[in-house]
Length: 146
Ligand code: FES
Image (cartoon, rainbow, N blue to C red; front, side, top):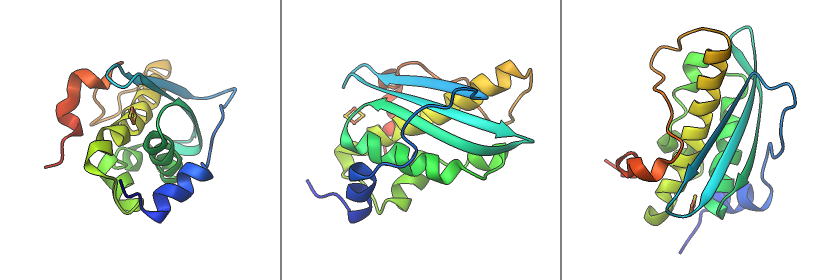
């Protein structure tokens, strides 16, 4: 299996590993099929994601995609952060092997879960954000490429 240099870099030197103590939103998502779990913390101020961190019990591709996804979301408005799809993250990493595409969905869903948590805590509705699932393996179709 071939991984791009960017995937290897984000796997070997993951950015934003850890937690944010006073996070504005926290999201946890798992994939029961592979047993991997992802937790994302977001700090949001004035509608902007000013910090993002993650912790994962996941494979190398899950580490690399959450490292990249948390880098990409920092500085974004809430609406723009919804554009950070697993595809956008994979593109930024120069691609993932097809059998690892589902790992990038774990990162996307965990980001969404953290945004959902933020919205719930603040009694707001984030347009276009769907209620996240706890286990993405039940929604494997979102892991398929077009
Ligand atoms: Fe489970 Fe990659 S194999 S997230």
